[in-house]
Image (cartoon, rainbow, N blue to C red; front, top):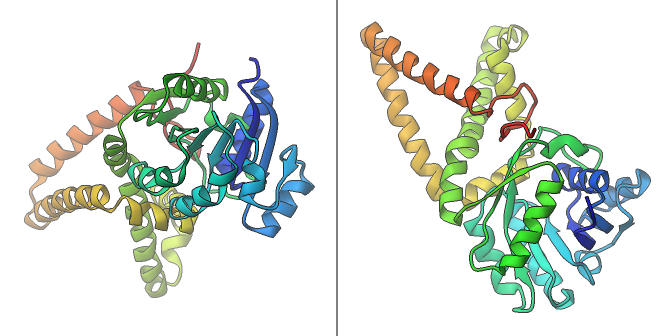
Length: 305
């Protein structure tokens, strides 16, 4: 691979940003990588481990002169960051993000950006429950999907960003913002909310059962606890900024749950068997589509050959 951006600025240095650093270096995609974090402790750790070529003290300092600026902060903070960096963005630069909500990010960021830059939102479907600058690894994006929401952005800027994500190992597709938010409400946001809820229920039961719920956890509950260990700030912002789609899917989930509850109460074994047979077939389809993995992340695409 060859250099795609001479200078890349990463605003926020958590799992995704630190993994981007490793993935870009692995493929030689960036001439210089500059990073920053609002947290002085995070900046200190990033300097200690040599994460970036330079660690800036502020977002504006990091973005100054960058060819690509990627907002890797919680969704609720992106508007303020965009306002801070707007005065220093150089003409022709691309601004992107990695947030798992797209319409709210567009609404918060786009009004602050000058007409001389390209805004190309993106969302890599990859993650673990780990966070911080030490958590990243180059393989995080390998054979994962990255969704780009081009809107009316310049075609060349979109193609260039696509090339970066493909160079970091991802499969890339484009999608409209509203559709993205609905899809992610189904595949990620609502499952996370259910996981948080189930872990809360188990914690209540643990007080009654003297830790037996935790002590005898099977694989299903371990998966719940892994998901519920994700960054609380990030997920708070996700739900607050994708509330319509999440509430729609939660409503549908509640209807399905009530139907199962009724079948169990009434001893309707046929309904339960048919329902589980149907969902089992869906699960098999997910596996056949290459979307299953034992790794602690999601969004795996068919392996590249």
